[in-house]
Image 1 (cartoon, helix red, strand yellow):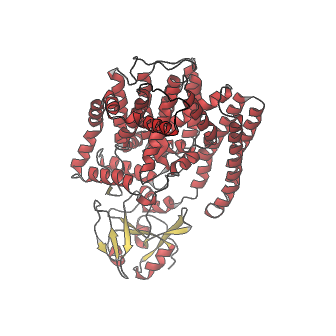
Image 2 (spheres, one colour):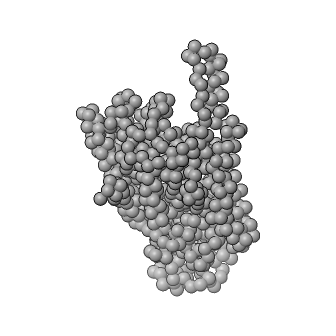
Image 3 (cartoon, one colour):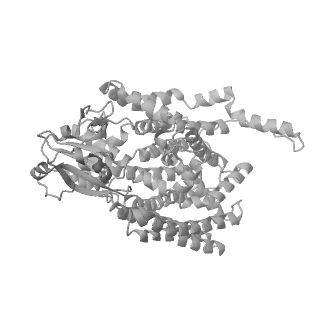
Length: 614
């Protein structure tokens, strides 16, 4: 087997174990997973591949690609958690393959291989690749687009010491139409996965790189030049890439008409179709609320300072984020000096900086927004660690010692924090604190090996610890935590009811209840001492106003989900025949959920009678 084949097989075994182990063993996690999985199920039940609907409401939050993928998986595996997450895990593997191909072209097979091992054992990448959310499709589409750009622009590079060579001398953008079509087709698919961001930001990443590398050399100042002149020289140097003529020529070199045409050809048909189906409501709400509003206002209390994403990357890229210090130091020193890897490093740094800066400027912030930068970060980390192993690092050895020591300290912190955090919310799960032993032991062993000049062994040891950490976290620890989610057991009591069943929720409503109940749930709110109003969004199908007595005063079955606290508020206004049919813990809320309804309906549906507490 060739070296490439060996790398891909080993990478698939490592990443596949992390991404697919017990993939369907946990219930869907509130709130995005059940919304997306439930939307795909409702679309499949209606045989409607155009209009996203969840809980009988138009779902405007995300475009359709993820729903198509989940619907296809449902058709193959049935409607279950594994099928809901299968496409994300598969696309996670696809992202790793793209990262490997890109790394081989930019650096070497060794850097590419370790970048994939690093990427496949980071927390947030694994979260994205194991969740029924559009993050994995977006990451894949973005990585595929930039990988095609790299493959179409640069010659194969078999030896890391050789400089990158252009396929077409003097052109830093592919000149063959096939590569250009592939780049923008990948972005077009991304627009179907997440929206315009999948076209704008990858284009900006490539564009920023081109603005830098297409600049003509600049004469440097003498060391004895006046301070004011040196400052002026520095400022004008920073603005040079954005000089109007240079900027326009660079943009035109990227073939913007092809980009717009391909994106419209791939994504526009569905956007137009769903707009016609909903009288323009879906595209209007999506572009105004989910794009412009999220960029200009902090929605759902998801705000933060300019330090939000650096901190999010430190947490999300763990356990490899402990190398942030030496990696940043190595990059700064190498970019200042310039060498055969300068263009490769510039491209990856542009990828990270452009993406993080764009979302730092945006008002709404979530850790998942910067996960598309993880392939670039993994390549940068792999390159810097490779230089240290080969003793070519420009960074002090103390940086690397501090990185391994940081892993030990974080491991100690995790070991101590988990028992304290789980004492009240997950009784009996304090032993999950052993999760911290993986980075603790791996960091300590790697530090010792590094001190004894066994640097390759230090890397392998730390990688093994990162693999076991992620495998235990996602393959086992989350399964233990999931056992404390029991609302699905409460909602499955809706099985067996005759047609006409209406389910309401008062004081609380989670998407998992809709998914596992298999029935739309109306949100009820207490408007006055005697009235509960059923409120839905304007695009919803339920627009009624009725008292609790009227809600239950129907020959058709009625069920209501609420908490113990809210039950006390409405108990005196419930009809006599309405009783508590079941209860379950409210996950992570420290409360008890109640299912109430008419006992006669419950018995007719074939369920066992329950004790009534009033």
